Length: 153
Length: 380
Ligand SMILES: [Zn+2]
Image (cartoon, rainbow over all chains, first blue to last red; front, top):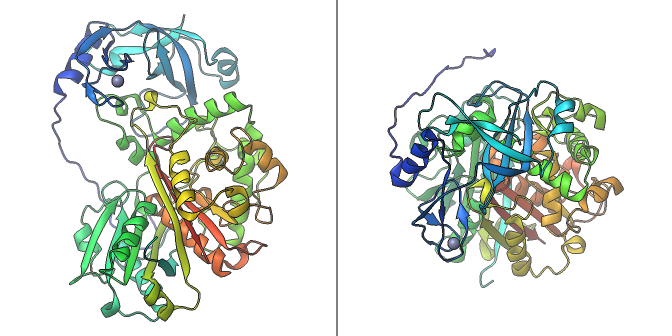
């Protein structure tokens, strides 16, 4: 870390308290109940997940709540095999976008539930289009990681 | 366009760590930019800075650092947060109002002092959902790369060739941070990151202070006999939620279409002589070339195989080495434009392209998987 010239090592730690707002609150309370909530736009008919307070495309409120399926299809993924600040779990792990059944946008989460220690073996197993199913944590805190990962269905 | 705007001078700092402090570096680059055209601080019209003070500067004290160093005090100045090519348009518009006859743009980033790039980009994610899943610029780019290769059959070798080309071009660029003669195998066998990306396909974190002086037509002709004219600009951005987007159909198409229309460009592949694009991840140069209309969707793999985008090719892309060679986060778009300016003037030194350059394209992007894009066209 240290350089041959004079430097100042400094770190900024500031506390913030952020409001979830009613929509995120309900979405994350759903996580604690092992439920994935989306909202439906009455104009374009899309089901957005995670739930949103408005449809960005139609720019109107989305006040219809929908509990969405816990199964879906893989649309994009990455085998993450390096350490970084804020990583959600120990590497290697698979970060992924999946389309939950009946919804109209992709949902970001992790894929797991099998041995991912070897990339080549993992690559043979994980394919876009593969079917996935939610696995829940036993210790839930109304947090996105209450949903542990999606495993091959 | 009713009022013409020219770029008359540029200056930039080098990418590796410098023992100079942020304040002095900002001053030196400004000073060099003004000196090149014999400008004094008194002559300075207005100033626009481009930076991201908290995460890519760690200073959060722009007022302490920016206004003496750019000569802006007692004058009009304001700050733009995020990608610096956006600041270019703000500067050009100030001149178009007729209120100022010149504008200094200064992009500032001292990456060597920062945490890792992805420690910062993690903070681009909202704090409730994306951030807790560890989404960064790198993991979102990895999704995009995987989807890109799968959709079009572009190979990992073709993606790696971008890094071979750009890090090789950087051998000729004295400002570059990372450079070298690599093989495709070297790139693919570099340290693992977020697959299919490997370490050498990911831009470093660099320093980059880039100053650019814009002037009205009248003022430009007084300052230089080689003004480079602003011809066209476009920018567009997509929704934030990654899952709401088509990662392979980006707003670069919209930005490019606007810029081409403004510049009167009908066939970019023929009319653009050199392009400098922002490719923090190697494969993105291929995808961006397609989105810019240099080839059909999925065609950029073949284009790099043919050598079209080499420094000696028909349409050189990133002769400077691009962002893979030098990644001063928010400064990178304005740095692309500065490189285009040097190519048009024949002042790019060892990385000057072989052919005559009349029209150059510069591209900047920020946000996950190219959420926001800007395109500028300049020419003689
Ligand atoms: Zn809608």
